[in-house]
Image (cartoon, rainbow, N blue to C red):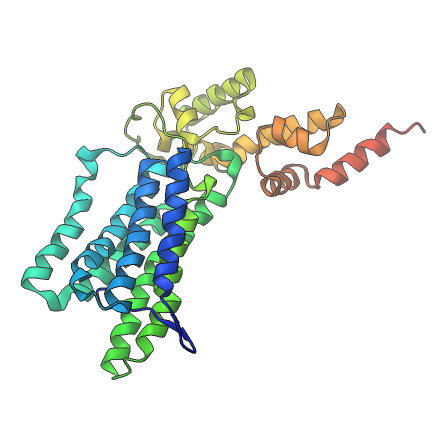
Amino acid sequence: MQNRIVVYSTGMLTLPIPLVVALILGFLALRHALAGDRSFLFLVLLVVCAFQALVISLTQHYGLSGLWPLQLLAAVATPPLAWLTFQSAALRPFDHKRDWLHLLGPAFTAFCTVFAPMTLDVVLTALFVGYGIAIWVRLRRDDALPLARLSSGPLPALIWKAISLLLILSAIADILIAVALWLGQEQWRPLIISVFTSFTLLGIGLLSLSQEAEGQAEDGGLSPPGPETPSPSEEDAALIARLDALMIKERLHLDPDLTLARLARRLHVPIKQLSAAINRTKGENVSRYVNGFRVRSACALLENGTRVTEAMLESGFNTKSNFNREFARVTGQSPSVFLRGMQHRSKPK
């Protein structure tokens, strides 16, 4: 990472692409800091990406080689910071008593800088790949995003999958640079960096700013997950009966900010236990379960003459794409087809 350089030339004009990336990310960080609409960790991730791009530009394009330790610091901080941001946005609030272990990666890198500098590229590549894979693997679980808004559908998972791929892409860039240097093709390095590094840093920064990437933090922790059983049990049935009654009585599905963590808290059960019970009993994940209530509510509103957009918002959805997709899944037809059928049935014969 410490030997990255990005230069784009057109005639007599030389434009340092990382500097442009740094300015964009710095502006966005300042804008959202003033607006107060993002969490602290989100802003720190954005600032670190901007700082890394700035130091790359100053170190390589302007010849300030003495800044390379700062470039290394920003690079080694990015993967664990991306994980902690993902964790606080979608899994659980930040806890310094548990999360201090993520300092081990930067600490080991500092050790290698002093005693084994030739291993730095390998260590940094392993950090980016390791954290990228960790995010991707976590997203494969049914209860992957307990703090994510259920009304957002698959969008939060897609955003974090993209960020995990960008982390891995950054590691691939380092591998390609090493191969280029081994082949004696140092002139390839600027092109590799311009394609990979700037795109990766800008992508991580912009994706992390999406409203749907950040969930709703809960007040306090939940109890540890209970053991799973391979098939529905009486305990599962009793829990789902309580959940159904709660949903019908309090119409929680109408809240667009409803999360799996919030449902688990209302029922006083672990997140994983509730998610597994819904999966085993209903044969679907919690998002589809809640969206079933929302679609039925939207159908009732449409039958009473409410317009489609208003019915979508009043039933707890906040994106048209997710509403249309879930409406078709539950009813087998689009909202417009449902309306036409309703109008046809209401005509006098």
